[in-house]
Length: 143
Image (tube, rainbow, N blue to C red; front, side):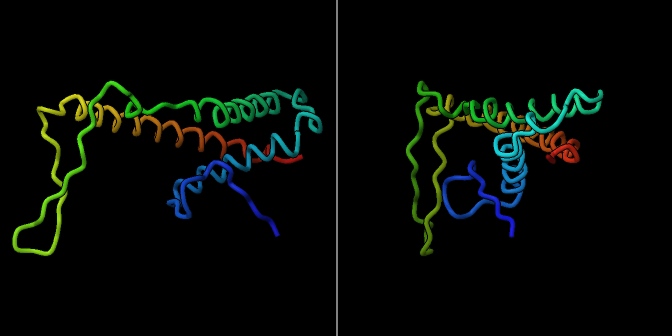
């Protein structure tokens, strides 16, 4: 039986499958580099394809272990005033609804949220691109 412990998934028992797929694939790469130690067992200088594959393996490994975790959200900025979360009762019903913050009073917050959406889209594209790169070299992940 094969099991895979995904060390980068934290924060509760539920994760969407798209996130699990990304983290599982890169956990396999990390396990390959750190546990199987392919640099000790494979002559990566054997030909141009192997040299290229090894360069790609290590590039993706560094991205996953160093660069991706170093991402900092624009929402982490300390100099922006965040609105209080407010709700109000829906008239005539037994429901409550969220009250959006005042756009003028919290203009900086709204700009930051918009910037965050763009940042998230950029990060999602980068994740997708690197997952494709990993799939392209999967035939080299053996010892």
